[in-house]
Amino acid sequence: MEQCNKPTDTARPRSLVTIADHSRKKIEYLIEMAQEFERRPNRRLLEGKVVATLFFEPSTRTRLSFETAANRLGARVIGFADPKVTSGTKGETLKDTIMMVSNYADIIVMRHYLEGAARYASEIAPVPIVNAGDGANQHPSQTMLDLYSIYKTQGRLDNLDIFLVGDLKYGRTVHSMLTAMYHFNPTFHFIAPEELAMPEMYKAFCREHGIRYVEHTHFDADVISGADILYMTRVQRERFTDLMEYERVKDRYLLKLDMLSKARPNMKILHPLPRVNEIEYSIDENPHAYYFEQARNGLYARQALICDALGITLDTIKNDKTVIES
Amino acid sequence: MVAAIENGTVIDHIPSEKLFAVVNLLHLDRMNTAVTIGYNLKSEVLGRKSIIKMADKFFTDEELNQLAVICPNITLCIIRDYDIVEKRTVTLPDELRGIVRCANPKCITNNEPMSTHFHVHDAARSTLKCRYCNTIIQLDDVQLVENS
Image 1 (cartoon, rainbow over the protein chains, first blue to last red):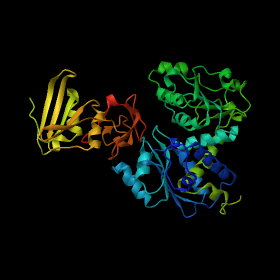
Image 2 (cartoon, rainbow over the protein chains, first blue to last red):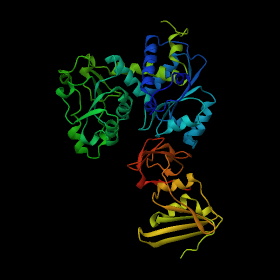
Image 3 (cartoon, chains in turn brown, purple):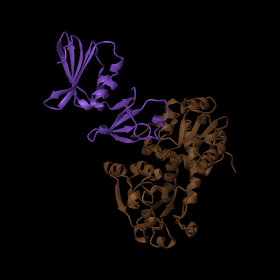
Image 4 (cartoon, chains in turn green, blue):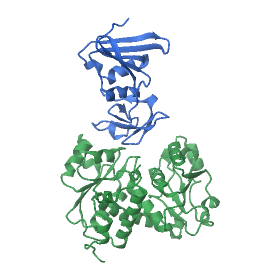
Protein backbone atom coordinates (compact mmCIF):
# COMPACT_ATOMS: atom_id res chain seq x y z
CA MET A 1 0.00 0.00 0.00
CA GLU A 2 1.09 3.57 -0.61
CA GLN A 3 2.47 5.40 2.37
CA CYS A 4 1.78 8.90 1.16
CA ASN A 5 0.78 10.61 -2.04
CA LYS A 6 2.87 13.57 -3.10
CA PRO A 7 0.78 16.73 -3.33
CA THR A 8 1.23 16.85 -7.09
CA ASP A 9 -0.35 13.39 -7.39
CA THR A 10 -3.68 14.83 -6.40
CA ALA A 11 -3.77 16.83 -9.63
CA ARG A 12 -3.14 13.85 -11.89
CA PRO A 13 -6.18 12.20 -13.47
CA ARG A 14 -6.37 8.62 -12.36
CA SER A 15 -8.67 5.71 -11.84
CA LEU A 16 -10.16 4.60 -8.56
CA VAL A 17 -10.18 0.81 -8.31
CA THR A 18 -9.88 0.19 -4.57
CA ILE A 19 -9.67 2.35 -1.46
CA ALA A 20 -6.60 0.30 -0.52
CA ASP A 21 -4.67 2.33 -3.11
CA HIS A 22 -5.21 5.46 -1.00
CA SER A 23 -3.01 6.73 1.81
CA ARG A 24 -4.32 8.31 5.01
CA LYS A 25 -3.49 11.70 3.58
CA LYS A 26 -5.43 11.00 0.41
CA ILE A 27 -8.49 9.78 2.32
CA GLU A 28 -8.47 12.95 4.43
CA TYR A 29 -8.08 15.02 1.26
CA LEU A 30 -11.12 13.36 -0.32
CA ILE A 31 -13.16 13.85 2.86
CA GLU A 32 -12.34 17.55 2.78
CA MET A 33 -13.40 17.62 -0.86
CA ALA A 34 -16.71 15.91 -0.01
CA GLN A 35 -17.29 18.54 2.71
CA GLU A 36 -16.90 21.28 0.11
CA PHE A 37 -19.49 19.58 -2.08
CA GLU A 38 -21.86 19.17 0.83
CA ARG A 39 -21.67 22.91 1.49
CA ARG A 40 -22.30 23.74 -2.16
CA PRO A 41 -23.32 20.70 -4.24
CA ASN A 42 -24.59 22.50 -7.36
CA ARG A 43 -21.89 23.73 -9.71
CA ARG A 44 -20.90 23.93 -13.37
CA LEU A 45 -17.49 22.47 -12.62
CA LEU A 46 -17.89 19.62 -15.11
CA GLU A 47 -19.64 21.62 -17.83
CA GLY A 48 -18.59 20.22 -21.21
CA LYS A 49 -17.62 16.86 -19.72
CA VAL A 50 -19.32 13.56 -20.43
CA VAL A 51 -19.54 10.95 -17.67
CA ALA A 52 -20.33 7.39 -18.78
CA THR A 53 -22.04 5.09 -16.29
CA LEU A 54 -21.66 1.50 -17.48
CA PHE A 55 -23.64 -0.88 -15.29
CA PHE A 56 -22.97 -4.42 -16.46
CA GLU A 57 -24.92 -5.48 -13.40
CA PRO A 58 -27.97 -3.55 -12.20
CA SER A 59 -27.53 -1.38 -9.11
CA THR A 60 -30.11 1.36 -9.14
CA ARG A 61 -29.06 2.98 -5.89
CA THR A 62 -25.38 3.32 -6.78
CA ARG A 63 -26.12 4.39 -10.35
CA LEU A 64 -28.56 7.11 -9.29
CA SER A 65 -26.05 8.40 -6.75
CA PHE A 66 -23.24 8.63 -9.33
CA GLU A 67 -25.50 10.14 -11.99
CA THR A 68 -26.84 12.72 -9.54
CA ALA A 69 -23.26 13.57 -8.55
CA ALA A 70 -22.35 14.13 -12.21
CA ASN A 71 -25.53 16.05 -13.02
CA ARG A 72 -25.18 18.38 -10.04
CA LEU A 73 -21.69 19.30 -11.28
CA GLY A 74 -22.96 20.14 -14.77
CA ALA A 75 -21.70 17.05 -16.62
CA ARG A 76 -23.72 15.16 -19.19
CA VAL A 77 -24.30 11.50 -18.51
CA ILE A 78 -24.39 8.60 -20.99
CA GLY A 79 -24.44 4.88 -20.33
CA PHE A 80 -26.59 1.89 -19.65
CA ALA A 81 -28.32 0.52 -16.59
CA ASP A 82 -29.26 -2.83 -17.99
CA PRO A 83 -26.57 -5.20 -19.28
CA LYS A 84 -29.10 -6.87 -21.57
CA VAL A 85 -28.93 -3.89 -23.94
CA THR A 86 -25.15 -4.04 -24.33
CA SER A 87 -23.03 -5.78 -26.93
CA GLY A 88 -21.70 -7.97 -24.15
CA THR A 89 -24.71 -10.16 -24.76
CA LYS A 90 -23.49 -10.56 -28.35
CA GLY A 91 -20.10 -11.71 -27.12
CA GLU A 92 -18.24 -8.39 -27.13
CA THR A 93 -15.32 -8.30 -24.71
CA LEU A 94 -15.12 -5.84 -21.84
CA LYS A 95 -12.03 -4.38 -23.49
CA ASP A 96 -13.91 -3.56 -26.69
CA THR A 97 -16.76 -1.93 -24.78
CA ILE A 98 -14.37 0.16 -22.68
CA MET A 99 -12.31 1.25 -25.71
CA MET A 100 -15.45 2.22 -27.59
CA VAL A 101 -16.93 4.25 -24.73
CA SER A 102 -13.55 5.91 -24.08
CA ASN A 103 -14.02 7.60 -27.46
CA TYR A 104 -17.12 9.34 -26.18
CA ALA A 105 -16.65 9.98 -22.46
CA ASP A 106 -14.13 11.82 -20.27
CA ILE A 107 -14.53 9.34 -17.42
CA ILE A 108 -16.16 5.93 -16.99
CA VAL A 109 -18.01 4.85 -13.86
CA MET A 110 -18.48 1.11 -14.09
CA ARG A 111 -20.19 -1.65 -12.18
CA HIS A 112 -19.41 -5.22 -13.20
CA TYR A 113 -20.35 -8.67 -11.97
CA LEU A 114 -16.81 -10.00 -12.50
CA GLU A 115 -14.13 -9.47 -9.89
CA GLY A 116 -11.14 -7.47 -11.11
CA ALA A 117 -13.07 -5.95 -14.03
CA ALA A 118 -12.40 -2.39 -12.86
CA ARG A 119 -8.65 -3.00 -12.42
CA TYR A 120 -8.47 -4.42 -15.92
CA ALA A 121 -10.51 -1.56 -17.39
CA SER A 122 -8.22 0.97 -15.69
CA GLU A 123 -5.21 -0.66 -17.36
CA ILE A 124 -6.63 -0.46 -20.87
CA ALA A 125 -8.76 2.69 -20.87
CA PRO A 126 -7.31 6.03 -21.95
CA VAL A 127 -9.76 7.78 -19.60
CA PRO A 128 -10.05 7.34 -15.82
CA ILE A 129 -12.20 4.52 -14.46
CA VAL A 130 -14.17 4.77 -11.21
CA ASN A 131 -15.08 1.39 -9.78
CA ALA A 132 -18.75 1.30 -8.75
CA GLY A 133 -18.42 -2.31 -7.59
CA ASP A 134 -16.79 -5.37 -9.15
CA GLY A 135 -18.48 -8.58 -8.04
CA ALA A 136 -17.69 -9.45 -4.44
CA ASN A 137 -14.36 -7.66 -4.69
CA GLN A 138 -14.31 -3.87 -4.16
CA HIS A 139 -16.80 -1.03 -3.83
CA PRO A 140 -14.62 1.98 -3.02
CA SER A 141 -17.28 4.68 -3.36
CA GLN A 142 -19.35 2.90 -0.67
CA THR A 143 -16.26 2.81 1.54
CA MET A 144 -15.62 6.50 0.90
CA LEU A 145 -19.15 7.46 1.88
CA ASP A 146 -18.87 5.26 4.98
CA LEU A 147 -15.66 7.02 5.98
CA TYR A 148 -17.21 10.42 5.32
CA SER A 149 -20.22 9.45 7.44
CA ILE A 150 -17.99 8.31 10.29
CA TYR A 151 -15.97 11.50 10.09
CA LYS A 152 -19.09 13.69 10.02
CA THR A 153 -20.72 12.01 12.99
CA GLN A 154 -17.65 11.55 15.17
CA GLY A 155 -15.60 14.58 14.16
CA ARG A 156 -12.61 12.35 13.57
CA LEU A 157 -11.54 9.01 12.13
CA ASP A 158 -8.85 8.21 14.70
CA ASN A 159 -9.16 5.91 17.73
CA LEU A 160 -12.79 4.83 17.24
CA ASP A 161 -14.58 1.70 18.43
CA ILE A 162 -16.23 0.30 15.32
CA PHE A 163 -18.68 -2.58 15.68
CA LEU A 164 -19.43 -4.61 12.56
CA VAL A 165 -22.57 -6.75 12.77
CA GLY A 166 -24.14 -9.50 10.65
CA ASP A 167 -22.61 -11.04 7.55
CA LEU A 168 -18.90 -10.45 8.00
CA LYS A 169 -17.91 -13.34 5.75
CA TYR A 170 -19.27 -12.16 2.42
CA GLY A 171 -19.91 -8.47 3.09
CA ARG A 172 -17.45 -6.54 0.96
CA THR A 173 -18.36 -3.24 2.67
CA VAL A 174 -17.06 -4.48 6.01
CA HIS A 175 -13.90 -5.87 4.40
CA SER A 176 -13.19 -2.56 2.67
CA MET A 177 -13.82 -0.78 5.96
CA LEU A 178 -10.98 -2.75 7.58
CA THR A 179 -8.62 -1.90 4.75
CA ALA A 180 -9.47 1.79 4.80
CA MET A 181 -9.59 2.30 8.57
CA TYR A 182 -6.21 0.73 9.25
CA HIS A 183 -4.64 4.17 8.90
CA PHE A 184 -6.66 5.47 11.85
CA ASN A 185 -5.92 3.16 14.81
CA PRO A 186 -9.43 1.72 15.23
CA THR A 187 -10.63 -1.04 17.55
CA PHE A 188 -12.99 -3.38 15.72
CA HIS A 189 -15.61 -5.63 17.20
CA PHE A 190 -16.82 -8.42 14.92
CA ILE A 191 -20.34 -9.60 15.79
CA ALA A 192 -21.53 -12.50 13.64
CA PRO A 193 -22.76 -16.09 13.68
CA GLU A 194 -19.96 -18.61 13.30
CA GLU A 195 -21.00 -19.40 9.72
CA LEU A 196 -20.61 -15.76 8.74
CA ALA A 197 -17.60 -14.84 10.90
CA MET A 198 -14.89 -12.50 9.66
CA PRO A 199 -12.61 -14.57 7.40
CA GLU A 200 -9.17 -15.46 8.68
CA MET A 201 -7.37 -13.45 5.97
CA TYR A 202 -8.95 -10.22 7.26
CA LYS A 203 -8.16 -11.07 10.85
CA ALA A 204 -4.58 -11.74 9.74
CA PHE A 205 -4.61 -8.32 8.05
CA CYS A 206 -5.62 -6.75 11.37
CA ARG A 207 -2.88 -8.58 13.27
CA GLU A 208 -0.23 -7.64 10.72
CA HIS A 209 -1.20 -3.96 10.94
CA GLY A 210 -1.62 -3.82 14.71
CA ILE A 211 -5.40 -3.32 14.52
CA ARG A 212 -7.15 -4.50 17.68
CA TYR A 213 -10.23 -6.66 17.25
CA VAL A 214 -12.65 -8.55 19.47
CA GLU A 215 -15.03 -11.26 18.25
CA HIS A 216 -18.54 -11.77 19.61
CA THR A 217 -21.35 -14.13 18.75
CA HIS A 218 -23.66 -12.42 21.24
CA PHE A 219 -25.44 -9.15 20.35
CA ASP A 220 -27.17 -7.12 23.08
CA ALA A 221 -27.25 -3.76 24.83
CA ASP A 222 -24.10 -4.50 26.83
CA VAL A 223 -22.10 -5.29 23.71
CA ILE A 224 -23.43 -2.19 21.92
CA SER A 225 -22.53 0.05 24.88
CA GLY A 226 -18.88 0.13 23.78
CA ALA A 227 -19.51 1.32 20.22
CA ASP A 228 -18.89 4.64 18.50
CA ILE A 229 -20.11 3.20 15.20
CA LEU A 230 -22.53 0.29 14.86
CA TYR A 231 -22.28 -0.90 11.27
CA MET A 232 -25.18 -3.24 10.52
CA THR A 233 -25.33 -5.66 7.58
CA ARG A 234 -27.90 -8.17 6.50
CA VAL A 235 -27.69 -11.88 7.35
CA GLN A 236 -28.88 -13.47 4.10
CA ARG A 237 -30.60 -16.83 3.96
CA GLU A 238 -28.81 -17.84 0.76
CA ARG A 239 -25.43 -17.62 2.48
CA PHE A 240 -26.18 -20.61 4.72
CA THR A 241 -25.49 -24.20 3.72
CA ASP A 242 -27.45 -25.36 6.77
CA LEU A 243 -30.91 -23.77 6.79
CA MET A 244 -31.53 -25.00 10.34
CA GLU A 245 -28.53 -22.92 11.36
CA TYR A 246 -30.00 -19.91 9.52
CA GLU A 247 -33.30 -20.30 11.35
CA ARG A 248 -31.44 -20.53 14.63
CA VAL A 249 -29.37 -17.34 14.20
CA LYS A 250 -31.42 -15.15 11.85
CA ASP A 251 -33.08 -13.12 14.63
CA ARG A 252 -30.02 -12.88 16.82
CA TYR A 253 -28.51 -10.05 14.84
CA LEU A 254 -31.57 -7.82 14.58
CA LEU A 255 -31.21 -4.41 16.16
CA LYS A 256 -34.14 -3.49 18.40
CA LEU A 257 -34.88 -0.16 20.02
CA ASP A 258 -34.36 -1.38 23.59
CA MET A 259 -30.87 -2.54 22.70
CA LEU A 260 -29.80 1.12 22.41
CA SER A 261 -30.47 1.83 26.10
CA LYS A 262 -26.78 1.81 27.06
CA ALA A 263 -25.38 3.30 23.85
CA ARG A 264 -22.82 6.10 23.99
CA PRO A 265 -24.38 9.49 23.14
CA ASN A 266 -22.15 9.83 20.04
CA MET A 267 -22.94 6.32 18.74
CA LYS A 268 -24.35 6.19 15.21
CA ILE A 269 -25.90 3.29 13.35
CA LEU A 270 -24.76 2.82 9.76
CA HIS A 271 -26.05 0.39 7.15
CA PRO A 272 -25.07 0.15 3.46
CA LEU A 273 -28.77 -0.43 2.59
CA PRO A 274 -31.02 -1.97 1.41
CA ARG A 275 -32.28 -3.01 4.80
CA VAL A 276 -34.72 -5.88 5.20
CA ASN A 277 -35.52 -6.38 8.86
CA GLU A 278 -32.15 -6.16 10.59
CA ILE A 279 -32.89 -2.71 12.02
CA GLU A 280 -36.28 -2.33 13.67
CA TYR A 281 -38.29 0.42 11.94
CA SER A 282 -38.94 2.21 15.22
CA ILE A 283 -35.21 3.02 15.35
CA ASP A 284 -35.50 5.23 12.25
CA GLU A 285 -36.61 8.18 14.38
CA ASN A 286 -33.95 7.58 17.06
CA PRO A 287 -31.02 10.05 17.17
CA HIS A 288 -28.58 7.13 16.85
CA ALA A 289 -29.98 6.21 13.42
CA TYR A 290 -27.84 7.58 10.61
CA TYR A 291 -28.35 5.26 7.62
CA PHE A 292 -30.47 7.59 5.51
CA GLU A 293 -28.07 10.51 5.99
CA GLN A 294 -25.28 8.05 5.22
CA ALA A 295 -26.85 7.36 1.82
CA ARG A 296 -27.08 11.11 1.14
CA ASN A 297 -23.39 11.46 1.96
CA GLY A 298 -22.79 9.14 -0.98
CA LEU A 299 -23.66 11.99 -3.32
CA TYR A 300 -20.93 14.25 -1.93
CA ALA A 301 -18.38 11.45 -1.67
CA ARG A 302 -19.03 10.52 -5.31
CA GLN A 303 -18.75 14.13 -6.45
CA ALA A 304 -15.33 14.15 -4.81
CA LEU A 305 -14.29 10.84 -6.40
CA ILE A 306 -15.36 11.90 -9.91
CA CYS A 307 -13.52 15.23 -9.63
CA ASP A 308 -10.39 13.64 -8.21
CA ALA A 309 -10.32 11.07 -11.01
CA LEU A 310 -10.58 13.92 -13.51
CA GLY A 311 -7.64 15.72 -11.89
CA ILE A 312 -9.70 18.54 -10.36
CA THR A 313 -8.00 19.57 -7.11
CA LEU A 314 -9.33 20.63 -3.74
CA ASP A 315 -7.93 24.12 -4.36
CA THR A 316 -9.93 24.39 -7.57
CA ILE A 317 -13.07 23.29 -5.74
CA LYS A 318 -12.50 25.76 -2.90
CA ASN A 319 -11.99 28.60 -5.36
CA ASP A 320 -14.68 27.44 -7.74
CA LYS A 321 -16.45 30.31 -9.54
CA THR A 322 -19.05 28.01 -11.09
CA VAL A 323 -21.06 27.44 -7.91
CA ILE A 324 -24.82 27.72 -8.38
CA GLU A 325 -26.17 29.25 -5.17
CA SER A 326 -29.58 27.89 -4.31
CA MET B 1 20.91 -43.57 -19.95
CA VAL B 2 20.43 -40.08 -21.36
CA ALA B 3 22.94 -38.95 -23.96
CA ALA B 4 25.20 -35.99 -23.19
CA ILE B 5 24.67 -32.77 -25.11
CA GLU B 6 27.37 -30.51 -26.55
CA ASN B 7 25.63 -27.20 -25.83
CA GLY B 8 22.35 -26.45 -24.14
CA THR B 9 20.46 -26.71 -20.87
CA VAL B 10 19.79 -29.65 -18.59
CA ILE B 11 17.07 -29.51 -15.98
CA ASP B 12 17.53 -32.16 -13.33
CA HIS B 13 15.67 -33.27 -10.20
CA ILE B 14 12.24 -32.62 -11.61
CA PRO B 15 9.63 -34.46 -9.51
CA SER B 16 8.15 -36.89 -12.03
CA GLU B 17 4.58 -35.72 -11.46
CA LYS B 18 5.68 -32.21 -12.46
CA LEU B 19 7.49 -33.20 -15.66
CA PHE B 20 4.70 -32.47 -18.10
CA ALA B 21 3.91 -29.16 -16.43
CA VAL B 22 7.55 -28.17 -17.00
CA VAL B 23 7.34 -29.32 -20.63
CA ASN B 24 4.24 -27.18 -21.06
CA LEU B 25 5.67 -24.14 -19.30
CA LEU B 26 8.85 -24.09 -21.37
CA HIS B 27 6.94 -24.73 -24.62
CA LEU B 28 9.18 -27.67 -25.44
CA ASP B 29 6.62 -28.91 -27.97
CA ARG B 30 7.50 -25.90 -30.11
CA MET B 31 11.26 -26.47 -30.10
CA ASN B 32 13.17 -27.37 -33.26
CA THR B 33 16.34 -28.63 -31.60
CA ALA B 34 16.88 -32.03 -29.95
CA VAL B 35 15.11 -32.54 -26.62
CA THR B 36 15.70 -35.63 -24.50
CA ILE B 37 13.30 -36.38 -21.70
CA GLY B 38 13.97 -38.95 -19.00
CA TYR B 39 10.86 -39.89 -17.02
CA ASN B 40 10.69 -41.82 -13.75
CA LEU B 41 14.45 -42.25 -13.36
CA LYS B 42 15.76 -43.55 -10.04
CA SER B 43 16.78 -40.83 -7.62
CA GLU B 44 18.27 -41.12 -4.15
CA VAL B 45 16.71 -37.83 -3.10
CA LEU B 46 13.31 -37.95 -4.79
CA GLY B 47 12.80 -41.68 -5.27
CA ARG B 48 11.70 -41.01 -8.82
CA LYS B 49 12.81 -38.02 -10.80
CA SER B 50 12.70 -36.72 -14.32
CA ILE B 51 15.26 -34.90 -16.40
CA ILE B 52 15.12 -32.78 -19.55
CA LYS B 53 18.08 -32.10 -21.85
CA MET B 54 17.68 -29.42 -24.47
CA ALA B 55 20.34 -29.06 -27.13
CA ASP B 56 21.31 -25.54 -28.21
CA LYS B 57 18.70 -23.97 -25.99
CA PHE B 58 19.40 -21.30 -23.38
CA PHE B 59 16.73 -19.58 -21.35
CA THR B 60 16.57 -16.13 -19.84
CA ASP B 61 16.50 -15.80 -16.07
CA GLU B 62 12.90 -14.65 -16.33
CA GLU B 63 11.87 -17.76 -18.25
CA LEU B 64 13.65 -20.09 -15.88
CA ASN B 65 12.36 -18.44 -12.72
CA GLN B 66 8.84 -19.22 -13.85
CA LEU B 67 9.72 -22.84 -13.17
CA ALA B 68 9.88 -22.00 -9.48
CA VAL B 69 6.07 -21.87 -9.53
CA ILE B 70 5.86 -25.61 -10.09
CA CYS B 71 9.22 -26.96 -8.90
CA PRO B 72 11.05 -24.63 -6.55
CA ASN B 73 13.91 -27.10 -5.94
CA ILE B 74 15.04 -28.05 -9.44
CA THR B 75 18.63 -27.71 -10.59
CA LEU B 76 19.67 -26.32 -13.96
CA CYS B 77 22.95 -26.97 -15.72
CA ILE B 78 24.16 -24.82 -18.56
CA ILE B 79 26.29 -26.94 -20.90
CA ARG B 80 28.94 -25.63 -23.25
CA ASP B 81 31.28 -27.93 -25.13
CA TYR B 82 30.08 -30.95 -23.07
CA ASP B 83 31.05 -29.23 -19.80
CA ILE B 84 28.81 -27.83 -17.13
CA VAL B 85 29.74 -24.14 -17.11
CA GLU B 86 27.05 -23.02 -14.69
CA LYS B 87 24.76 -24.66 -12.16
CA ARG B 88 21.86 -22.73 -10.86
CA THR B 89 18.66 -22.94 -8.90
CA VAL B 90 15.45 -21.06 -9.59
CA THR B 91 13.92 -18.20 -7.60
CA LEU B 92 10.24 -17.41 -7.48
CA PRO B 93 9.78 -14.02 -9.19
CA ASP B 94 7.85 -11.25 -7.38
CA GLU B 95 5.40 -11.09 -10.28
CA LEU B 96 4.02 -13.80 -12.52
CA ARG B 97 2.35 -12.75 -15.74
CA GLY B 98 0.44 -15.17 -17.90
CA ILE B 99 1.69 -18.25 -16.03
CA VAL B 100 -0.78 -19.10 -13.28
CA ARG B 101 -4.52 -19.45 -13.66
CA CYS B 102 -6.73 -17.70 -11.09
CA ALA B 103 -8.72 -20.13 -8.96
CA ASN B 104 -11.70 -17.74 -8.80
CA PRO B 105 -14.15 -18.54 -11.63
CA LYS B 106 -15.60 -15.03 -11.31
CA CYS B 107 -12.20 -13.39 -11.84
CA ILE B 108 -12.05 -11.21 -14.95
CA THR B 109 -8.96 -13.14 -16.10
CA ASN B 110 -11.08 -16.29 -16.48
CA ASN B 111 -13.69 -14.48 -18.56
CA GLU B 112 -11.76 -12.11 -20.84
CA PRO B 113 -8.97 -12.79 -23.36
CA MET B 114 -6.18 -11.33 -21.22
CA SER B 115 -3.09 -12.34 -19.26
CA THR B 116 -3.24 -13.29 -15.62
CA HIS B 117 -1.04 -11.36 -13.21
CA PHE B 118 -0.05 -12.53 -9.73
CA HIS B 119 2.16 -11.07 -7.02
CA VAL B 120 3.85 -13.08 -4.31
CA HIS B 121 1.60 -12.39 -1.31
CA ASP B 122 3.53 -14.15 1.42
CA ALA B 123 6.80 -15.80 0.47
CA ALA B 124 7.07 -17.69 3.77
CA ARG B 125 3.63 -19.26 3.32
CA SER B 126 4.09 -19.69 -0.45
CA THR B 127 0.99 -17.75 -1.41
CA LEU B 128 0.22 -15.72 -4.53
CA LYS B 129 -2.36 -12.95 -4.88
CA CYS B 130 -4.29 -12.19 -8.06
CA ARG B 131 -3.74 -8.57 -9.13
CA TYR B 132 -7.32 -8.35 -10.37
CA CYS B 133 -9.67 -10.13 -7.95
CA ASN B 134 -7.30 -10.33 -4.92
CA THR B 135 -7.83 -14.08 -4.56
CA ILE B 136 -4.98 -15.69 -2.65
CA ILE B 137 -3.79 -19.10 -3.81
CA GLN B 138 -1.30 -21.58 -2.42
CA LEU B 139 1.69 -22.28 -4.60
CA ASP B 140 1.13 -26.01 -4.12
CA ASP B 141 -2.36 -25.72 -5.61
CA VAL B 142 -1.61 -23.57 -8.66
CA GLN B 143 -2.96 -24.45 -12.04
CA LEU B 144 -1.04 -23.19 -15.01
CA VAL B 145 -2.64 -21.21 -17.80
CA GLU B 146 -3.14 -23.44 -20.81
CA ASN B 147 -0.56 -22.69 -23.53
CA SER B 148 1.12 -20.17 -21.26
